[in-house]
Length: 113
Length: 112
Image 1 (cartoon, rainbow over the protein chains, first blue to last red):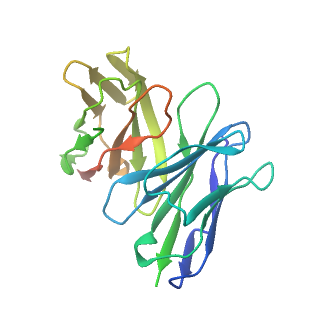
Image 2: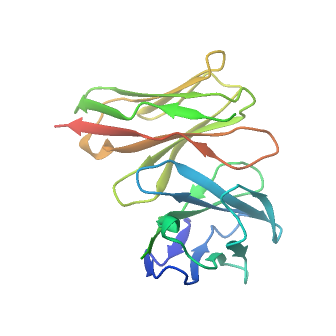
């Protein structure tokens, strides 16, 4: 069964450093998403991406964040200058054009020191 | 505003039925979902229901939707220890949008 994959599973970084989180969505899906879950809190929507552009973003997704689909398979989330409060689990998801059902990857745990 | 509420914890004995409840505020919700998260793992889609349905059954899972009360429930029949996890209710609040709004999750503990 096709699935969303994410790398790395765990990333530790120093405050102020840039990080790139990587995702490979399900191959025939056209919509891609990033969500985050701060420890003990709700899963929160960050951004959705379709047709090579951002289709929707939340208030959390400020200028420090960017997304990219650099090739036909990868979807990345970049945090330009990480802050302590960026420590969270980051989930990538994808959905096809016909339904809104989103399939999630296993997540990347980001720890900012 | 959009909000999805769930009770935080449920404990049941193995073999019993579990019922996890969720309330949502947006009456225009078109799709409602249940996701399962095991410790240290990602979000596994369990099932979903369209807003024009009252009930959906999928093996041991039964989803009930009461649109009038904006109440969604997930019933797990014959609960097993492997069902121990956090269960998230989620909605897509508006047509034309795709962002999921999640509840805080219900931790299900199954006692052997």
